[in-house]
Image 1: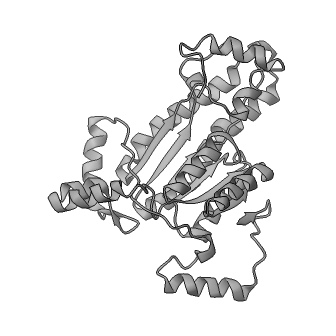
Image 2: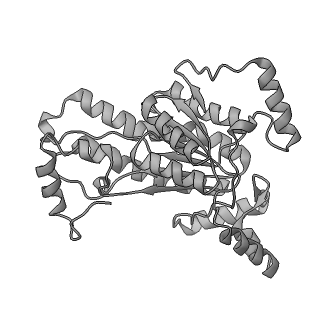
Image 3: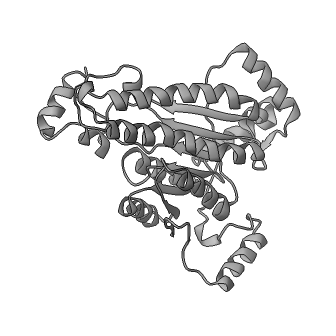
Length: 317
């Protein structure tokens, strides 16, 4: 487990150990900056359908494909394998049957110390990914790392606030330093707020919610996009919310921030498609996470009961 502190320093290995690790990695065919003790045994190509885009964007994509290598990280893309005929299609199907959908991929997950971020980190690792765990909460991030360790997997913990440009840049640079690449950026970190009338929302609360939930997504993308462009592609996944589509009363800053994430995602999806970078977002309603229960107020039992009455199934995820 590597922990990068606020100053950007990483675990206290000796120069000799680092050199030995680098030599060992290079002899195994791994990136020179990748320490072998951090490498997780992995398994297949990431398959996420691109969002629907305009005909003009489709044309740009076709043009980009004709100019760019048909590989990502040295591996054929599933769509290329299928286009290559029966042999390629069979190879793609074998990848899918292996049960490890993220073999050889490196994923950076923000907000990995709890909730969706922790669950995603565990799932990504089980599917073969090398996972970078980013959170402002050291205890939560380390707990997630320990959970990976208990399953025989490893992760790299980077502490930082996604709303700060220096921290956002550092999390991407640490990913590159340790693993040599970045295939998946999951901008998941976010905060909630207590329900209150809009006119009672303090200015500092408004600024903090938008800083973490919206600016944090922007900063993550800002520093990851150049790396993904150089690699020839990648995937960006952002956590939005149904609050950004259908807001509930009493959560103006939160709804505004998540609506912004949805629009940001759409804008980047069109802009980055020619570079073979797929951009998508999730819009969950409610799940058993600290953020959700924190937004229910002091009387959580009554708040949860009232919320469940608005859901036909009467339950949360």
